[in-house]
Length: 288
Image (cartoon, helix red, strand yellow):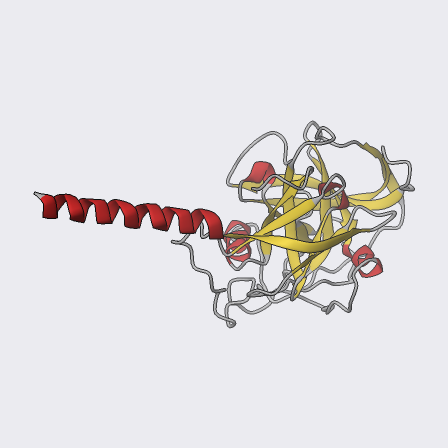
């Protein structure tokens, strides 16, 4: 009997020690792979790249939006970010506006950001992470969207994975409830469908990439009007005005995204770690 109780006590002690180790060193999600997908996979499902959209970009302002924050000052918030080079992430500035400490979830682990910087006039920001397995970056392009082209928005609305298909419908002037920010130009997209199908707010997809059918990033998703089904993006070209180092630009991406497969492509980009969930701690003391 003594022997049985001794073995039982040993197992209890071992379990307690393991629990303490996990708690102290934050060894969460042990079942999720730490390593990135094989390099041959990249951010997108391996395929021949699609053809870049053709047509005429618009330079006429057709919309006027007053963009307001959808969270209370001092609250912790979640958003989306995407990788553009090793240790450099792009998100929306309003995601980290009230942020003391930011985390990005990569390969099932929360990775604390070392620093972040907002654009003074555009709703974009960059996050710098420490050393770690870098996910495949998304290629960004200076190619402007053309009227009626498909756009695909990937991210974590309401902290849940989702992808949205839209159509480009015009240029907007954006005003914000931020004294220090001047009005900026943004692109307007008409929401067509979501995968998985949901309704209501897309809050939390802010900071996610808007890509064309080749997978090239054209814009950063920054706002959504639920009543009218309009999605607003900031041109990704504004990123180069705040990013601390050169970020590779591409003419076209490495994907062939369609209305049939955009959900799978979005899932793959998230699984690859290229598009990730962001957690902003307003106090700097809370953790995701």
